[in-house]
Length: 92
Image (tube, one colour):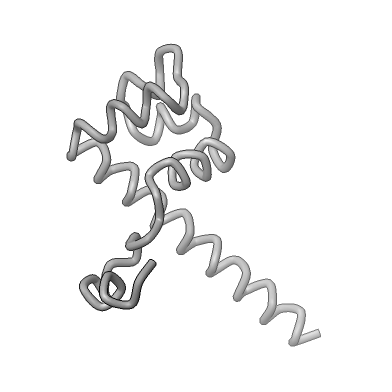
């Protein structure tokens, strides 16, 4: 990642994160069944695979947007839990 690319998108929290990384994280975090419940798209509900979902998401901007938003929301809540845990440990 060069400095020029970072400066082009300083406010994009997904800059530099590959779609496969996002998808693998969400599958590990939720599993295919829950992902299909959270985001009702065929590639999550019928014979899901990383390969087929990547192909679909790269061609379908609205679906990719939903996946990226779920990723950001999940990472945000993960960060909040960690902060709360640290606060509760420091208050003991």
